Length: 325
Image (cartoon, rainbow, N blue to C red):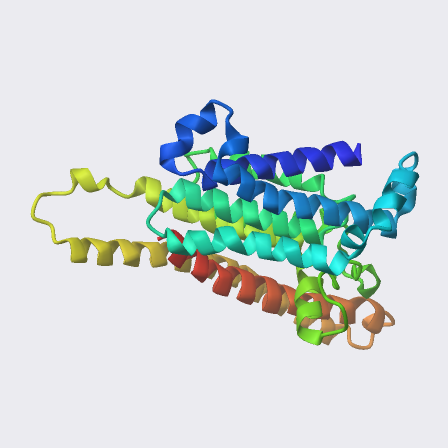
């Protein structure tokens, strides 16, 4: 069941990349199921193939009991230098994920729908690379939730910010996260790294443990920008004689206003959460469990504020707002 669910998750990611990377002139050919001959399908295969191979060999070396009945085949693959080099396979996934992002920067004026599909597909591939194989099927549930919520046209900005906040925290615990130091998953912190390097290991450690919150946070920002794009007036309906430069300036201000309002709502919640935890630690500083319960919780709040909110919501969100504008 895990293998089938992983295959479905990769198939969904494959479909989104195909639909996003195929140029408009080739959309008719794509609809006729001639995908193997298009450049988009070859590029998508270059992303999905190393991702599947890496997770397959990594999981086989980490938990071989999950592959009962296929031991001989996988052991033969594991003896091959290409399949045995997990560091090179992980780096191949990173390089393959960077190529669509470079194309996205090169074609900033393409359709917003295509840019959104590229971002979410690359994000899903990268997060799947950092998750345990048993948690990858959960991405199907996350994708289904985002698909349902983004199709609703009656949601306002506050509602989008609210479900982003709620789903980010729910997904953290759904993927096995807790407020205890012992629950930190170190298994994917060294993907693509041959030795201990504090900064890359720390980044990958955060991504592997906060994969769910990162997914819903970036999806929430993209949904906010999509909502602004749908509410914006069509250029063909603008009055004649309007200066193009003024129009672009007004659109830019509206885009950053949407981003600022979304981030400010999340900031208010994080401030309240930090204040509550600090008050609890202060009032219960002489409690018996101050070092086993309150101290780890305080460290986790620091990771939520510094890593998830400041880095993902503020910095990465600003880059996405600029990229999708």
